[in-house]
Each structure stands twice: as C-alpha cells, then as structure tokens.
Image (cartoon, rainbow, N blue to C red; front, side, top):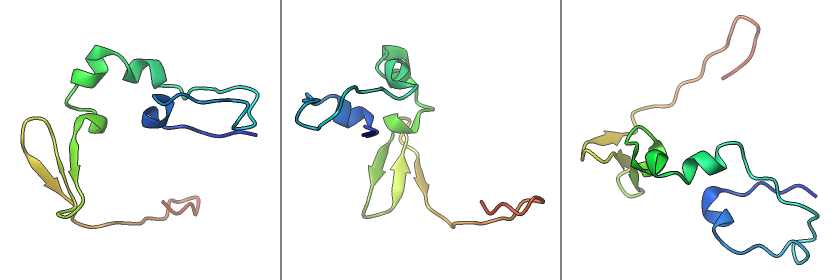
Length: 81
C-alpha cells in the first residue's frame, strides 16, 4: 500500500502497523523544507498566509495577492493544461 503524506502529516507520529504499511517514503523536498533557510525564504508559498474568506495569499512582506482567473491552454501536442 502506498500513501503520500504532506509535511504537516509527517510531523505526527505514524504507526506503520496500524496503517498497514511496510515503510514510509518521504517526498523529495522533505528535508529541505525542514531547514531554517527554507522556512525563512519568503519566495516559498509554504511561508505565506492564505485567507480563505478573501481568497488571498499574504506573503511575509505584507503584500496581498488575490485570485484573478483560471486559464486553460492546449499545447501543440494536444495536451490540456
């Protein structure tokens, strides 16, 4: 069985037998996200505050970024993204 955990979930104790898991593989940036440099980097969206009511992100410098629109495009190969 394979389960992917987020950074917040990994901070909780996980009982592998209770979850019926043989091993837990951390995602590729797990150790970098735990570093002081990562946590102090204002360019990382993990360090921003999200306001659900206003649907805005506030980055550490205090500036708010509001959602404007969602776009979709089709590449030359036909892939929708």
